[in-house]
Image (tube, rainbow, N blue to C red; front, side, top):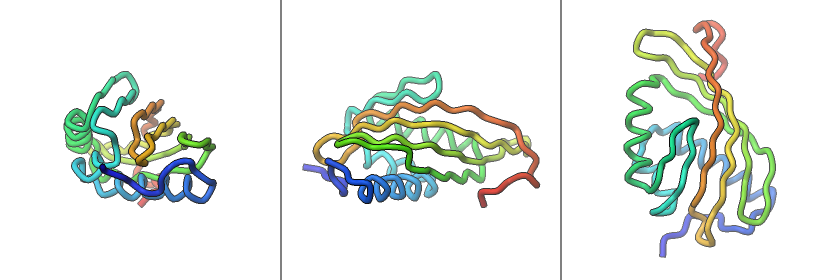
Length: 137
């Protein structure tokens, strides 16, 4: 049985640990590595997209980072319960035309008993910024 520690029920300390692990994984920009934190049948809502399962997660992330270059993410604890964590986040990236953006959002995560994320719901807004306004490097 796959497990991804820490396992629920989460404490404040283990919820923050899970968040840092997610931030580190996403900043690796390695879709396969990232997908291993999710259940085989994980359900996502990412903006207006609905993504189901690890295969779709890998494809989504690979496509994402073909368009979102020099991606850098920060996640911040918002709240938690036994098997759920809420985070706020921001990330910066540039597109192929060289324009920079900062994305802001919130995510709600639900985990199974093995510490794998089974649901991820993300609301995200993008703001075009000047390269000199970047603060995530």
